[in-house]
Image (tube, rainbow, N blue to C red; front, side, top):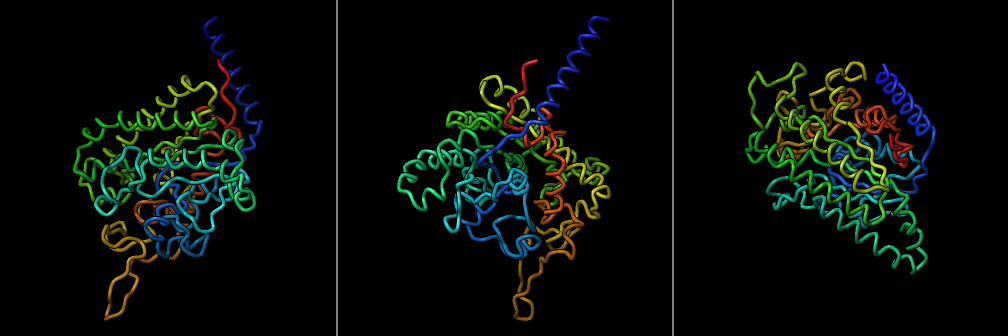
Length: 383
């Protein structure tokens, strides 16, 4: 009976603490984001050429460096915090870094791939490179600001770095890189500890540069993405009731369990950090498994593509053209209503899906600790 009462008391105390944290609100003056195409706002486009039309058609009405029809989740996060959309660090034209910077690039991995973008489709700007960019940005900014005028307007003050929110959304490409090199799921599983170890190091490095508030997304159900299902053969028995490839989703869940353990270790090793682990996997899978609840009709079929059972062809990506009767014609077109689709191009989600993801994760219901985004600066008190 005493043990039961103690348990009840602890639960009530925890709920009380969480309620107090939920009511508190942080005032983040900036965001710094690290990631891949799920949060890229122009990095890859600045280096390798702008993502073509119809990228950006829904919200920006023109290509805007994002691999979707509109905004990505990090855009919605910035909006909710009252911040401007993040400028890509690699974009030298028209950028404003006074409220943070985005180091993410499409195709990025945690672990360097040692290949070119043309060879593998993966970005050479892996997470360690993104950290190096952040390190240089942090250490050169005070010197540049001393010049005054436009430099003071476009670069953050030194105190901003310790008060900013640091967001991470990366890891998906580390899994698919193995599959695309014809590795088995067991071989991909075997290198996960190394990937997670490198991720842990980068978070620690950011902490050493003054970062204190971390919002870390796990990886999504890669086995539900057409670009994986079309390229990596599986048995019919390995397809789940929703139509996704179970082996690839199981490895993603293994990665996420390891990531959560890494976050727990970091909380012990970085005592002044507030680290929130965000389960975007569950939200994304819910959109695909119960699309009608969220207003979607086509959970697996891509909106922008061409051919095949998923409207996806690896050789004819979104916006691809072909010569028809001597005239260049776009054959991989956008669908009539992207808001009815979860998947945009076989790899990325639509703005409508990204909005749903954000709506779910902002409350804290999918976070550990379960605090809302607005309270991500608050550390969970010791129990």
